[in-house]
Length: 193
Image (cartoon, rainbow, N blue to C red; front, side, top):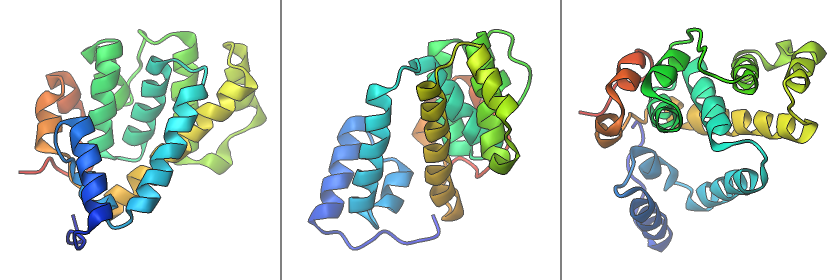
């Protein structure tokens, strides 16, 4: 990354230790976010609160995050969320979504969420009432539409900070990704060496 590691103190050690125990290793983005452990904890808590009460399925959340990350060229989050989507569907589905190809294996709801995430990530001022109506037509409630938009916004914020400050994809994350997912991510920052 473009910043050095912050001076280690109790808050830095606490966040690094917590994240390492959850993920099994200290991911590159955590090193960056230890510049503001308080903000990272608050941001993570907000995302967790959203995930705990949403009616969207785990697979729908993976579609939203994978679409958002790939739409803005974030390689690390595309690999991470593409891998999650592959486990919830299959590697070919995840790879096609990450490449922006047609994904017939997605349900009608997932296809609508994919289109919504892409629109919100690339041109939020270009969305229309008709776009929201298309979400309603596939059965999404207004609460789910709001949640979907929050998932996209959280991913945009997180990815923007990481990408702007040079966080690279963790080698271990890339090694654990299905080959199809890894091969589909031809954008963004390279995997760490």
